[in-house]
Image (cartoon, rainbow, N blue to C red; front, side, top):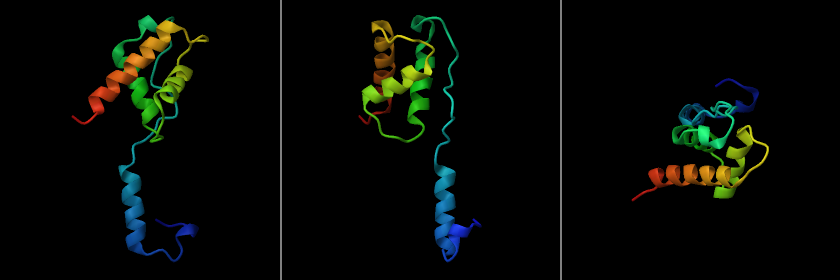
Amino acid sequence: MDCDVCVGVSDAVKDRVMFKQELEPVHIPYAPITTKNNIAEYSGRELRALYEWVMSDGVLRTHDEVADVMFSALPFARRGARIEAALRAAITSCESKSSFH
């Protein structure tokens, strides 16, 4: 790790920083989802992938915040009841699979 900021930093610390960077997940800057005409056209798998994309940046969010980010990645202007239900179902599905039992 060669940089101006690293002047005076021990090699052991540099190695730990490099190792940590290698372990961190990569956040893709765009949502991995195609444009469709209505929420019913998105499969559960696609909405779960969207949830995983939102969570991949490591930011802790409430369910409402996750739903907000998921909605912003979709091509819809209005967030109606069917869209809200689909987003909530995807969030619940993903979190129930990742929770500790």
